[in-house]
Length: 121
Image (cartoon, rainbow, N blue to C red):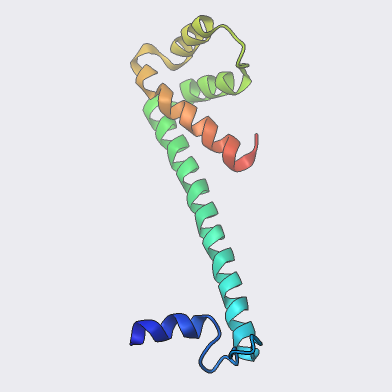
């Protein structure tokens, strides 16, 4: 029976003034505002976790590749166009990242993709 009461209360039922006439009481309005605040907080948490994940990925790549190699490859990847010759791009990336780091290429692409999605750049 408790399970049935909780959804009714959230919907503005018991004690909320939201009876059969469809009108909301003062508590119903407060519940609605609380729900909106919770949603905004969840968006901020999601946003913060995305930014945190991007920063973690960047730091890991810098650590694994070395800052200079990372920065060179990162800037090159941001500058290339989709219509550029894939073979030349691949050769240049291997040169910039170093052959020992080419296994990190998917993470570099992921970082750039995440940044474009989160920041629009």
